[in-house]
Amino acid sequence: MSGEAAFGFPNGVVMAHGIRRPHEAVDYEALVRAYPPPPEYFESAYYASPEEIERVQLARLRERAHRAYRIPFHRNRWERAGFHPDDLESLDDLWRAPSYTVDDIRQSIESHPPFGDYQGVRVDGANEEPLRVFMSGATTGAARPTFYTQWDREAGAILTARALYMFGIRPGDVVLNAWAYSTHNGAFSFDEAVHRWLNGVVLTTSTGNVTSSRRQVQMARDYQATAILTTGDYMLRLAEVAREMGLDPKEDFNIRALPNIGDSTKLEATWGVPSYQSYGFHEVQWVAVECPERNGLHVFEDAFVVQVVDPETGERLPDGETGSLVVTEIYKTGSAQFRYNIMDLSFLYPRERCACGSWLRRIGPFAGRGDNMVKLRGVNVWPEAIGEIACDGPLMDPDYFVRAIREGDRDDMVVHVVTRADRAQWGALKEETERRLQESLGLKIGVVLAEPRGIDALTEVETSPKPKRFRDERG
Ligand SMILES: [Zn+2]
Image 1: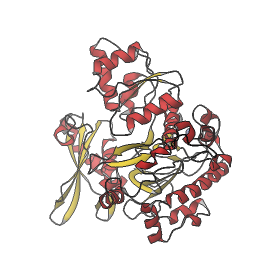
Image 2: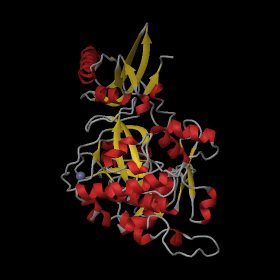
Image 3: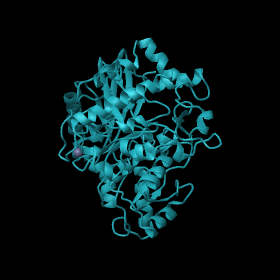
């Protein structure tokens, strides 16, 4: 495949003054052939046959494995596990490569500060092609840097652009970018996607600290923005501010897409347009996006191979079973993510044709974090799964908090859940909820009912950017 041969530097480019400019570092023709941007993507690779999808995946996987093999972090781990890139004769052989988690990345940084030994490029490589570095994970431990080549930025932006297109953003749209322009990748990924690959006009407002919420609302209205890139919570906050300003979110704006991760039902009801799910993370950008059938998220399989494993043992799980996502990107030229066990929980659908016409494999929506898993009397349980079941009643609010506790010699779990039911009904409702949990999980989980706002102290919803849902009190 000609696109594969040009993966990286185009041949025959003469470096002027010893440095390569973006157009010299990346063969843009090869880039869009290999990873079509929208709308072309939705007229081509999105409808590829299973054979074509897997043929491309295997070719890229092999190429990618040989690149990753040059990186000490991967090479050392692979040698210890007895894996070599030449072992990849089929997609199934990917299971022979060891996976790693964020803890391995942290150790790599500790032993090789400040960048770790997992980067595929070094600062002095910036002469050969423009490089960027972004940080992730500062909330838990030290920030983890990832270097991106020019190719990685462009290909990653194409993937993000595909997701935004699926959400409903179109070339020529004005889009507000209210993510923080900081050391994190987020705001820049969106910016590059809209600016470079969707031909949209970006208003770089950044967060409410930089551009006040009233000003964001005013700009969204004046410039007829079709989307505001931010969290679901801030998107709802902006609707409140709009109402305070005498504006109706549904009538007085041109919002057409909701690329805002959060309470979909509330977002749709507030802004009056459909909200689709998606999945991605810092190091690789967008992995999967929901199609209008709303039956799973299609993986961009020309750029990723996704596997699902038991979060505790790392063993392969069958299709349909929830476990931790293990992601291998097959599009970057810089820092490799090769069997990265990201500890986000989901499941894989079997390969089958979706009603939208695409054969791309689908994953379930994000179902929580694998590292929150609690082993309770031999059974793996996730606080998010408990919360989902507990809240799934007609008188329940989607607000809960799970505690793991120790009573004597025994581990137990308790879920606090908010209800609008009359107090007289609480006895029966508690029993009914405990029965539902027992049926679904095969475990007895205690239920404590609360009135609306009654668990705010536990979830810290007023003070934390994201409500907390779990606390391990077992010491
Ligand atoms: Zn579909």
